[in-house]
Amino acid sequence: MLVFQLVAIPLALLLFLWSAVRLFLGDRPRWIALARPLLWLAAAVAVWRPDLTTKVAQLLGIGRGADLVLYALALAFLAAVFYFYRKSRQLEGEITRLVRHVALTTAESGAEQAQSDEGQTTGARE
Image (tube, rainbow, N blue to C red; front, side, top):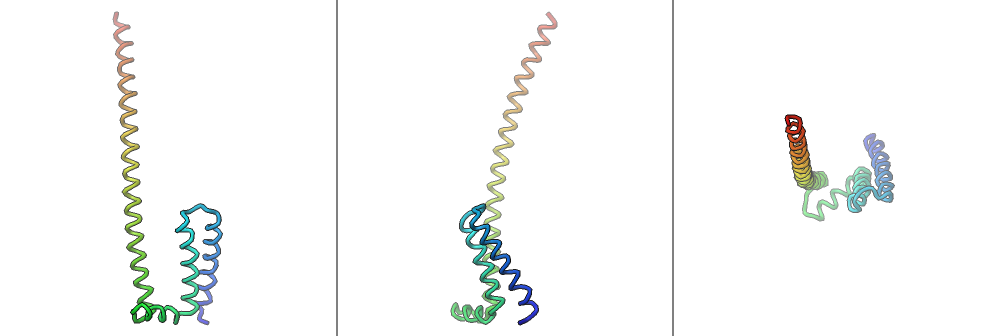
């Protein structure tokens, strides 16, 4: 067993256990909570038996296991980019609605304050 495998496999298994515990705590959406432990387990198996990635790649018509991993990472990266772009747009929309609400509330209270100040000034002159 290589030094990399001696380090990576226990690390991946610890992360698998941590993700599995978080799955049962229910602090994430179910599909994310389920995907994380499966991802760490797949990583541990791929490091332990790299020949399996080559066999899976050949079943899919891809020459090498390393190419399969690269393609999977590229697809995962694109999915993450689109996910975070959508989340960013949602947050921008929420911030816009909050700013509009605060602006309208401030404008209304400012108009009321101006009217009361005007009434006090007029009353003082008389």
